[in-house]
Image 1 (tube, helix red, strand yellow):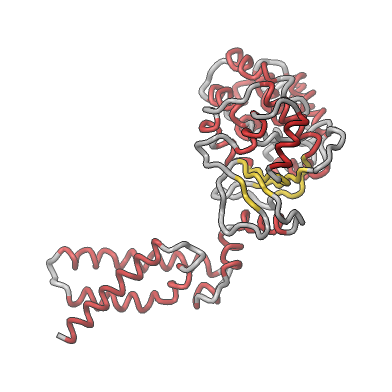
Image 2 (spheres, helix red, strand yellow):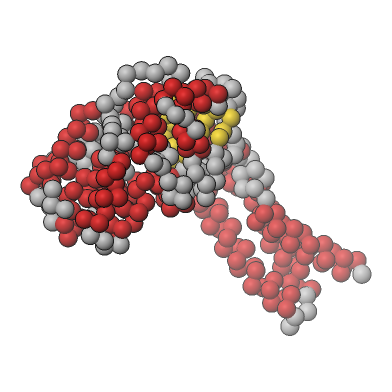
Amino acid sequence: PALRRLHGRALAFTAAWFLGWTLLPTGGVARFLLPLVPLVLAASLDAVAVLPPGGLAARLARAYLPILVGWQVVAVVAGWAGAPLGCALGAESTRAWRARNEPVWTEALGWMEASGNAGGTVALVGQGVQHPRPLGLRLWAHEIEHAPPVRALVRGARDEARLAVAVRQQRLTAVLYNLPAANFWGPYAARYPWTPREVALWGRYWRRHAVLAAASGRWSGEEGFLLLYRLAARAHPPVPLTLFLPGTEAVFVEARRGYFDGRPVADLLPLLAPYRGAFEGIAAYGMRTAILALDAGRAGEAAAVLRTACRALSAEERAVCRFFGGSDMPGGPDLPRRLAAGWPASRLRTSDEAALALNFGLPLAVVR
């Protein structure tokens, strides 16, 4: 009886460890279970030995053992280079684990906590609230199936002065923009369309108050690419051109989807035409229309858009262009000349340039 109780405890321990590893929050507690792998393996073997050989439980346990071993080998190899001691002994701190596994959000936490806006609100566009949260700041976000939070402020404002009042009442001091995620989830936001008046109002406020304070040092397929914009309390002269207008991604969903589905450009240009004046000074609109103009045979118009962007972007936003395009000019220094010389439309729909410009509003990048 005592031996049977020991085997039962070994089986219970193995099951509890498996549930803990799979269900507990990774980075909070689960990483400390890794050093127990040898003990779990021994307990599993002990439990298999006492189970009836032909029973279902024995077959499941035997199938589980190679999965357990393989899973842990992968986990150790993946983490060993970044934190060998923490990976082997469970001695890695929560902050160090997050910096290794969630580098984009960890970097953004540092920006927000160093911003000096204690008690303020940061609106998240393109993602929900992540943990941990920045100390002393409130995060304001909607889930992806809802409209971006800033849209509520814009819809309720009659003019720029009223919008400024709404921003102050919300204690909104910054916008954290997840560029790829906001555009990827754009079809959800498209259920809450922006009118040209709303886009124009938000754009005027944005160009007079928003300043790019920080941008991610890397692109992550899991976390995206973050840009932190500080909202100045007092308006400054409007910048001639800025890259993005966060929250308005829904405007471009139908056009970009139709383009890559093979619809004629003549059917797509009218979708964006009503917003031409509304997006004044917003490069992301120009980048998208440049692709359509290029496909329609208007290469000179597309080149003009790029030349304007090259001259007008701030130093901080030119750095974002360098990150994506390999140059401090959107598309690289030779792209306007190449566009003016003509580019076959047959190449355009399958090009990286078109994907970056239409999907994310990014500069037309020269892929070398």
